[in-house]
Image 1 (cartoon, rainbow, N blue to C red):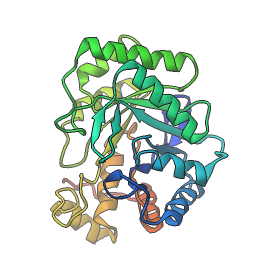
Image 2 (cartoon, rainbow, N blue to C red):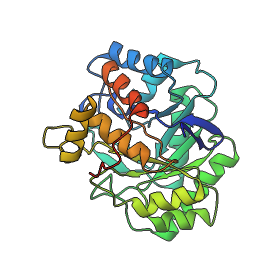
Image 3 (spheres, rainbow, N blue to C red):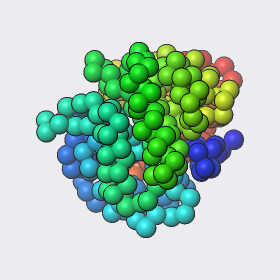
Image 4 (cartoon, one colour):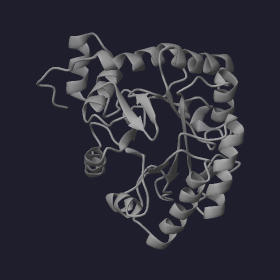
Amino acid sequence: MSTFQLGTFTVNRIGFGAMQLPGPGVFGPPKDHDQAIAVLKRAVELGVDHIDTAQFYGPDVANALIREALHPYPAGLALVSKVGARRDDEGNWTPAGAPDELREDIEVNLRELGVDQLAAVNLRIHNSDDPSAPSEIDHETFDRQLTAMIAARDEGLIGGIGLSSITVEHLKHALDRTEIVTVQNAYNLVDRSAQPLLDMCTERGISFVPFFPLGSGFSADNPVLGNPAVKQAAADLGRTPAQIALAWTLAVAPNVLLIPGTSSVAHLEENLAVADIELPADFAP
């Protein structure tokens, strides 16, 4: 299966994540503005129809680059953003999950991207100890957040509601109130702690977008890229370890949507080529 449903959009299962377009630490302008624009244009040329972004990437940088490169947007392009966090002047991640903050940040994303509606917006549950890790559910707070997201959807600002950095309990609670079209959580061949959440999404036909599919770093000792089975398969197939890790993640379930990010056209093309990789039957990272 090469496509999957993302709300009202049918998208290719390999999209593009804009997180690496800004400067180091996802903060400030890109090192090479023209290269960032070229990556976005090339992505769409190669069939990418799902771009994941956020106002707090930069902040403001990723959205501005997307608009500069691609507006007016091609038909069928699903622009997905997220709310629930902001950046301070030093680049620190801060929570912004109050209902009025969620609404304000949805509207900021719309203005920056130059659209009347986003395909989906993910409500990110902020964990002050680890921004990428799920927090335990606070039912009262979560209900207020869901009410704000439902209002934005019902008013046509967003096409669907997504959730990010959540637990199974968050998803169960949300589904008792409304439709959820996508879930984003950390997941890769080393960290499979979100497997129960992925299984639940698969059973219910909800797209699952793994972030950090290559691990949270890209150094030689990265436990994903340095995995012996990954390195061996890469050598045997004439591919890069990153391509093997992405191909494995794509094959985990039919509802997985990849959004590998890069600021390099060459890496973009490598990432989009993983759909053609057939891993050995005995591949067991």
